[in-house]
Amino acid sequence: MSYPTEADLLAKIPTQLYIGGEWVDGENDPFTVFDPATGEELVKVANATPAQARAALDAAVAVKDEWARTSPRHRSDLLRKAFDLLMERRDEFALLMTLEMGKPLAEAQGEVTYGGEFLRWFSEQAPRVFGRYGQIPEGTARMIVSKQPVGPCFLITPWNFPLAMATRKIGPALAAGNTMVVKPASLTPLTTLYMVKVFEEVGVPAGVINVITSRDTAGVSDIIMEDDRLRKVSFTGSTPVGIGLMKKAADKVLRTSMELGGNAPFVVFDDADLDKAVDGAIAAKFRNIGQACTAANRFIVQESIADEFARRVGERVAEFKMGRGTEEGVVIGPLVEEKAVNKVAEMVDDAVAKGAEVVTGGKKGEGAGYFYEATVLKGVSLDAQVVEEEIFGPVLPIVTFADEDEAVELANASEYGLMSYVFTENFSRAQRMMDRIEAGMMGLNVGVLSNAAAPFGGVKMSGMGKEGSFEGIEEYLNTKYTAFPEPHTDK
Ligand code: NAD
Image (cartoon, rainbow, N blue to C red; front, side, top):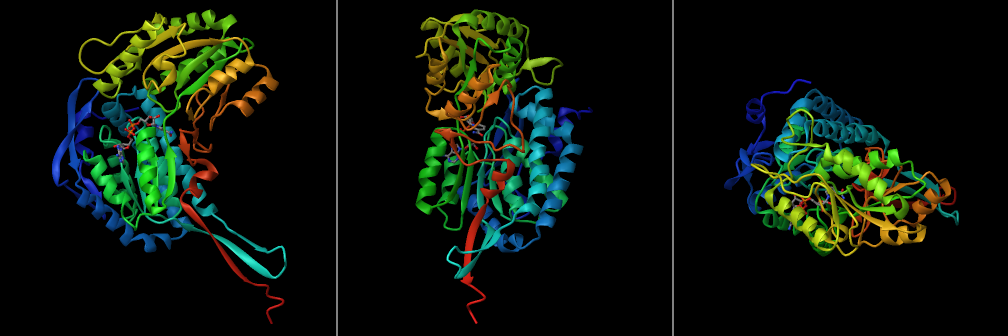
């Protein structure tokens, strides 16, 4: 690995809007992107007005027919070139994510791999979009079922995985022949801006991908959502914002994909391999400093092994090094902003007030930056905020259960249904849990499972639609049925 200096890297990152193939200034005053490990300014970024957001949609609409008529192979080749160039620049992308979002460099490298895979996967899917041809059952007519791009898309991404959340949407949208306006989170816009520069460099034509960054989030998104020419919105972020967007999407009957919040149960039975369960817990909880929608949120552990599990996890967590993600050996970087630290502190204090015991951690970091210690809590009450809400921080709360039915009841006692984890060596029990746990995804004896080839998405208040895999491109395609008379009777 060879990382550039931070100053050299920041000097080459675009900070303007990208509309119709031109990099342009925002018409509002630029806003600042901060390093969450120091609280210091990194750069200032263009701040789009609603009128500029409309201009971005104008650009996407202007080239939509031309882009839809390009060959799947051509789109595939562009995605593959973007993948190759991203891999060439992997160290730059990794460092950039660490700077603007705070995750340790090793994890940022992992996100380059994961995020890049969506480009490679959808470059492989672009030429594999097929329809079907058949006879209707009565034998009097034939049908063709064909696939068409949905039309201009609005892609809104969160701050926690600035690269992967963008490529997971841009990849399939592009592969399916759509044009788009992308809006990254204003806390971490730099990675997406640099990724879009990669698309520009490999030859994606002007207007196909447009990017707006703005502090007037509601203003810029409302004007796009209210426009009759928009045909699809894909959103990853919090459930309340997703619900607001779905209400607006209803007014225009938009195709909608929603990847929303989670509150993943992590269930450990007394027949589990405890080494695997402890490794899985560390990975499922502390990746991205706990700021992942897939993060294990509630550790539901069988009574007879709960103390042993808490002790072993606690010993590992107590060793974690906290610091700026660029430092060697750091596991716990900063949270994304001060508000997040205060929220996590409030949740831990609430759990302790309701009877939880702190096994390790439990305090804010000292000095500059937005740090909270990696924390393990045991004996947590079921009405504690850390159990009821998405924590989005490095806190591992343990509750206990007596038998399998109670484990299922506790696991399903959430409005969310995104990720779940189950640790058991009993195969019949594992299959029952697959059937009974209400979640879009399950890790069975494994703590990390996101993969571009797998369908990612939730049920209940965690959203609708799938990203990645074979399903991912379908979210960006309309299915059309064409009928014509039976050729042998139509003489
Ligand atoms: P957020 O909802 O605050 O913001 C997400 C995006 O929506 C940002 O780009 C933000 O600028 C934009 N936004 C905010 N208000 C808006 C509005 N009124 N109209 C249009 N856009 C608006 O979420 P966040 O804090 O960036 O991300 C954390 C949340 O995202 C967590 O709840 C997490 O679980 C969820 N998440 C889900 C997935 C998933 O795949 N299911 C993945 C990552 C994060």
